Length: 318
Image 1: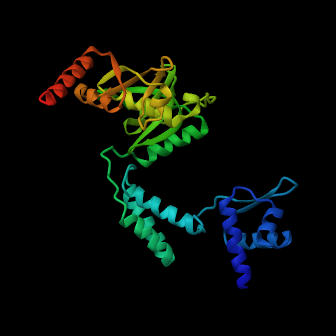
Image 2: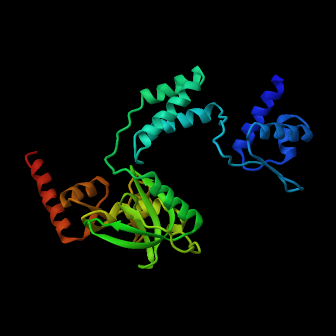
C-alpha cells in the first residue's frame, strides 16, 4: 500500500510538471507497466484529479483544470523558489498582493521541511528589499490585459498621459512588461498606426473588449524587454538629447546602461537620452567615460561648458 501511495504521488508530480505524457513515458519513469499506469490514473481520478487521456499512437495523459485547486507537489528547489518569490511579491507592485502573498507564504512555510525552512528564512532575513515608489496596479486590470493579449482581442481604454489629460485609446495588446516596480503594456495603437508603450497604472479598460486581430511581428527584432527599456528610458523625460560618443558602438553597448545607440562609423556612435535636469544630464554623460560631443540641445552644451569650467577651477591651484 505504501509503495502504491508513493507511486501515485510521483505520478501526480510528473503530471503537474509536464503538459503531456505518453503511457510508455510514464511507465519508463515509474518502472511499472502501462496497465499499472492506467490503474493509477483511475485512482487519481477517484481522488478528484481531472486526468485526461487521449487514445492512439499520439495520445497520452494530461492533468486538466478542476473545479478546485488540487494540492501541488513541489521538489526542494521548486519549494524554495516559490517561497522566495512570494516573499518578494509581498513587497508590492500589484494592488492587494502584499497581504495575499504573506498568507500564501505562511501556509507554505508551515508545511516546509525544516531543512528547507532554514534556507527560506535565511534568504528572507538577510536580503534587503528596497520598496519602490511606483503606483500599484489592480490585479483585474492586469488579467484583463493579459486575457486580451492571449485571445488577440483589441483593448479600448481611457489613458491618462504625462500631463494629466485623458484620451480614449484603441490598441492591440501584445506583452506586459514589469520594469523597476512599474507595469507597462506593449501594444500597437490602431489609431496612430504605430507601436506604443503604455503605463498600466494609467490604463482604465472599457468593456467589452474590441474585435479580434491578427498578431503582428513584434518590434525590436522580437526583444520586447530591450524595446520597452529603450523607449521608457527616454520617453518619460522632460529633456531629450543627442550626443556623439567617441567610442565604437560595440564598446558602448557593453556598458550596463540602457541607451539608444546608433553606430556612425568604426570609431563613433550616436546616442539619445533623456532627463528631467540638464545639469544632471551633463554629469551623467561624463560618467560614461569616453570623449563626447553634444549635438543637441544647445542648453545641454552650455551646461557641459559651465560644468567643465567649475571642474577646472576646482584644480586650478595645483
